[in-house]
Image 1 (cartoon, rainbow, N blue to C red):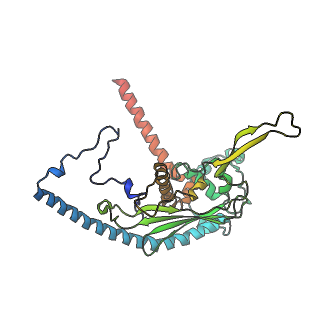
Image 2 (tube, rainbow, N blue to C red):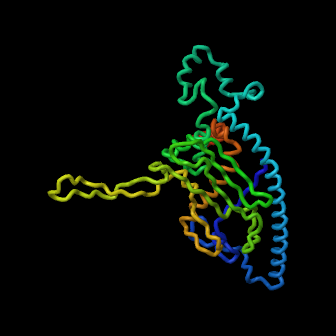
Image 3 (cartoon, helix red, strand yellow):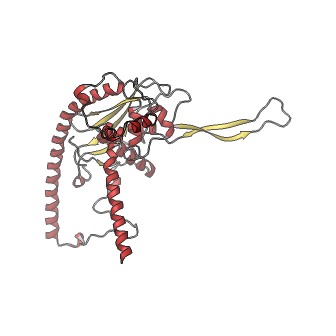
Length: 350
């Protein structure tokens, strides 16, 4: 895959201008350049201006570079789409792979080959999983398990337990790139008919600024996600997992009144849910309009998640499903542990 980093922004106000001070990590001391540029002689200041103008030439060249990268992305996205159609056919059980299609090494098969027959027999019951047997069609709940495994690493923990019954009906996730200009992309979540909502697809659109921001052109660092738009979910009555009912108070029956039981007063409040992903805060069209700190924080997470779904989950779904994607991480953790143990041993010998 030809990939590149999207600089994620919400508004130009979130950036820092040349005249604004930067704070250190402890937040106590303001950053000060090692040289006071304002105190330089005019002739040197002019040379600095010339360097910034040359820097802008670099920015323009970089913008052209990203345009060519996008053209490649669009070209190869069509190839990926064709491959992913085959993937969907296997997952849904519309195509049964055989022969060369299933000729791929498996660590589990290597391990089984080393085991004795009696060990394998004892492990049959352990290997039996709900929803999966020899008569299973396709790979049920493929995307549910894929997203659950990606939840902490790529989805910022957005998936809650009450989301899982809904995600059981997710059959595919696709991406469409805007073309010819790199102005954004759309994620589409495909669902089978289900008891939770009537939509068969849910969409999330991301808008990109593919060139330098006129207000701060020298800060250009590639295409920027600056706005996103979700879609309306048509929830069936009582099935909205983004809301929960809480009891506010209890109204007691009037004294002496017969047949007047106590009544509970309830209200609907927002519940944490992956499906809130489809109703992000709105970013005003006016770049000078205010965006609250809370909304800015929500959007920063949203942009990260959208980009991860596009670049990681859709492209490597089977590796998230199996957990193979995390095996290298475990190896690195083991290395760190061994190094720490060695250091502890050395300290103990001193």
